Length: 128
Length: 128
Length: 128
Picture 1 (cartoon, each protein chain N blue to C red):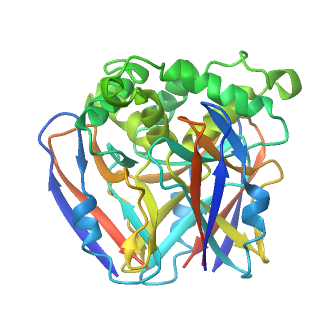
Picture 2: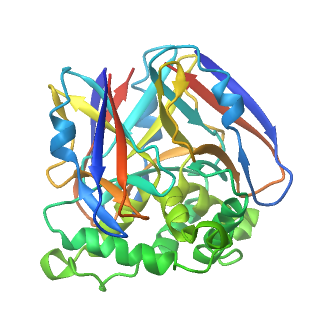
């Protein structure tokens, strides 16, 4: 089963919890859920969502590791740092499905990372 | 087929080779093995295990990239850096199964990374 | 279905677009394509390939994050940085197959990253 989620992001950089929307799509007892973002300046990350400071900490850390405005690609699009961050984090995650539910840990959520927003972002979810 | 491994880690930060335990679970000729850690301060990484210095080098590198003690989440749990590292590395790896064996390269092993130990960590292994 | 690609890289560090070779292997309507590199100093990354500057920017960024020549493993192989980079990026990507095609975004391509070339590198592709 293949599904699609559309998310409107609201800031230049934003991490958004999409766990609840994906949980609703799980209709098999056991398998793998693949979450994939088909954009080259966005990524999927699994992390804690209970404390929103973690999302902020992650964006701060990535900005220090990959500072904006220093890249050859900036001459074209001015979003070189967003591409590098997306490449580092990666566009997908695979989560086991156990007893008809996502096998996430207590403190794990599935996050969309937009590094070049605000934009309308699409996410593909495969349950199999 | 779904399996579970439990690992007691022994240090605040530790990378432990779990390849042998996963290899024993492979009972199909061809497919994918998904290794998933349901913890928000741990990760799964594939790398060389023959030289234990690599594990140490990786922990050193991550400590430089994501220094401890500088994060908003530290006010709650004092483990902000561990969350960011876990997000960067990611909680899972997928390894092809070829001729009834893990299709790892000669120098590749499957590693559990604990960034906030010592703890008892669970790992989910799906063979399909 | 399992396939293999062999790539001769041409530089010490190189990112090579392998999307066209993988696209040809897709022979099912819906599923997942797993791309896996069985080498501990190489990685698979998804990013934009239209502007080759992005590949250069990524190598520049990784060299700054993980400088060469500072690692314990260098005493054995002089490629400690290559191992750490490979661990950070990871050896595999999973791409959904939709309507008989790779579900990549308009600007996404599948890249082999060689951090310790030039070498002959093998890539395993599973379509299922």
